[in-house]
Amino acid sequence: MRAEDIPPALRGAFERWRNFCAQPLRDRFWGKVKIGSPDECWPYQGAPSPRGYMQFAVNGRQWRAHRIAWILERGHIPDGHFVCHKCDNPPCCNPNHLFTGTVQDNHADMMAKGRHPKGAAWKRSNLTDAIVLEIRKRYHPGKTTYEMLAREFGVSNVDVGLIVRGKIWKHLPVEERKPRVRPKGEQIGRAVLTEAIVKEIKRRLANGEKQSSIARIMLLNKHTVGHVARRRCWKHVQIIPTV
Ligand SMILES: [Zn+2]
Image 1 (tube, helix red, strand yellow):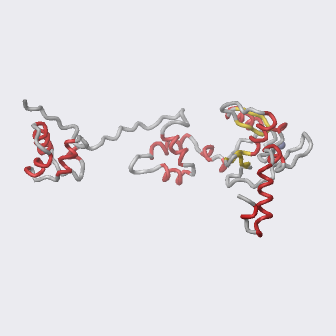
Image 2 (image 1 turned 180 degrees about the horizontal axis):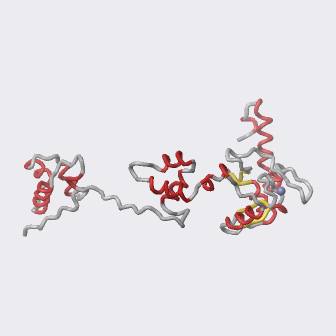
Image 3 (image 1 turned 90 degrees about the vertical axis):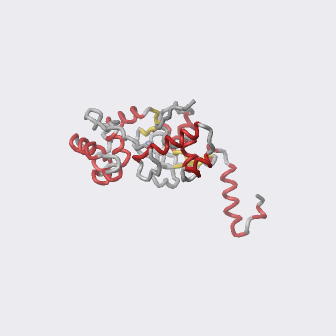
């Protein structure tokens, strides 16, 4: 796009945007950070995302600002590692205040500093053994949903799922659930065929009769015959082929 194509009123903004994009990534990033002394927090000055993270766009993808700070100044982030704050100040991009670690490292750091979220901020901690057992008892597929229980017990849907499946609170027993039996054949509410009719269809198919003629003779819809022929339904009904 050329500058002449831009409406005059927008040319100033376009120029600023073009100059901004032309800057090397490092300048563009550090231009948005309020850099102080080596010991101070260096807050990122951009607008936070709806979830409260400071974000910086690189090639159209949003990155957490402090991760960019780490990559620019320290280089590589090991696989599966997070960039964490020693200073507990999420907007801070001072590389001296950052470290990389696993989820466990971050958790250990949080616990050491007494930063572990409590109460309403950490809904799982509201749970007790009794509530977890109650959620497991109350969940019945088809009757209760994760959403219903989540609302009732003030936890997230995901947590209800994890509780019900025994992925968290593993020290407590999980309700045994019988596998759901899928109805077959005549057990299906709107089944139009009976096992006897299906056997007759299969016998005629095995004899090489055409689906359309079977449908005509047996007063059936040709699609119904087709379904049986393609084994979409009534798979469990077997016939002994006549030779
Ligand atoms: Zn800091």
